[in-house]
Length: 479
Image (cartoon, rainbow, N blue to C red; front, top):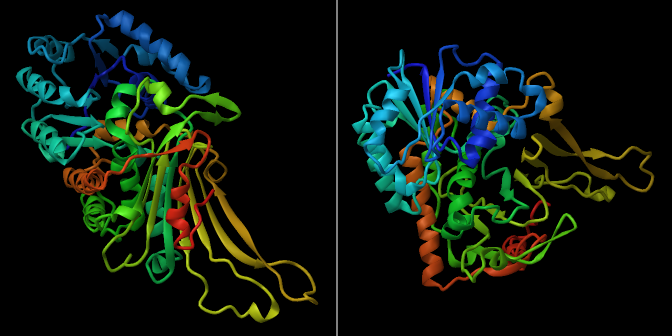
C-alpha cells in the first residue's frame, strides 16, 4: 500500500543516534520544505520527559550537532515534536503511546532503534496498541541479530505484524551520495560497463577504516567485533553494488534482486583468506591512545580488525579477488572502493623504455566524496632518450562538481524514503540472510581452526599478515 506518512514515531528518541543524526536530518528536511506541513513527529524512550522538555532536549542536540547555516527552520521544526515515555517491555504503555500518536490522516512511519532483545516485545506492543495496521510501515536500525538464526527470529517477529513491503531495514551507507553514485557511474556511462568484468578488472579493494576505538560502545562491540559490525552489513552492501548485474530498471525490486544474486554467489572463505587483529596502545594523530584490552578493562578475543579475500563464483567475476579490510584505531578515517584494471595486453612503448601502469578507479565515500580515475599520459618533452609515461589522475570532487546543493546526511534521504515509502535504498530480508549465511561460515571456520586476533599497534594499518594477504598475489593495499 502506497502512502506518504503524516506521523513519524521515533523509538530511542533520546539516544545518541537520534541526537547526532535523526533530529538534525529531520530538521534539515523541514527547513527545505521536503516534508509535508502536517507531519507530526512523536519521540519515545524510557526517559520521563514531557513535550516541552523533549523539545528542549532536541534544541540542545540540534545546536550541538547541526551546522549553524542549516538551523534556519529550527524553531518551527520543534513545534512538530511531542514525546511519550515508554518502557518497551511494558505492554500497558503502548495504549498511551497510541493515544499520543493519534489517528494519522494518511499513515504512520515508525523508526525503531532499540536493542535486538527489545524487537519482539516492541512489535507485540505496537500490535496490541493498534500501531501495526495496513497504513503503518516500520524502519529497523541495525543490529538485526548476531547470526543467521537470531536474525531470522527478529525478522519473523517483525513479519508477524509488518509484511515485507512495509518493512524498511536500514543500512545508512546506502544513503550516502557516493554509494548511490556507484549505480550512476556503472549504468549511466557506456565507458565502464563493457569493461566491468573479469576480462578487464584484476581485483577490487574495499576499505572501511576508523581512527576511533570503542567510543562508548563497549557492551555492544565486544559482543559483535569488526566482522559482524562492519563486514556483515556495510561492506557486503558495497560489494554487492560494485558487483551486481545491470537491473532492468531503477526500482526497489529490480535493484535488490540483483544484489541478492551477488551475495548468494560469495564463495566460502578458506582459512588462509582471512586475517583478524586487535589493537594495542599506540598513537592516532600524534596523540597516545590505549589498547582495546585497556579500554575494555579485561582480556578479550574480539577482533577490531579483519581483512578478507573474497570471491564471487559467477560468470562476470570468476577469478577476480575482492579484498575487504576494516578496523578500528587505523591511521586515518576513510571508506573507499578501488577498482584495479588489468595491464594493457601489449605495450607499444616498451621498446622506447616506457613503463605502463594499469588504470585504477578510486571511489572515495568518506570523509570526502570523490572519484579518481588514473590514466597513463606522456610526459612532455622531445623524447631523445626515450618516451616517458606517467600516471595522471582525473579527479571528480563531488563537492566541486555539485557546488549548489547542500551536502546531506545519509539519514536525510533514508528518513524521507521511509516517510514516502520508497524501499530502493533499504535492505530486503533475503539480502540480510545471505549476508549472515556467509558471515556465520567465516566465524565457524575461525572457531574450528582456533583463530585468535593478532595484535597491531594503534595507528598502524593492522597486523602484518593483512599485508601478506594481498602481497602474495602481487597486490598492494591502496594507502
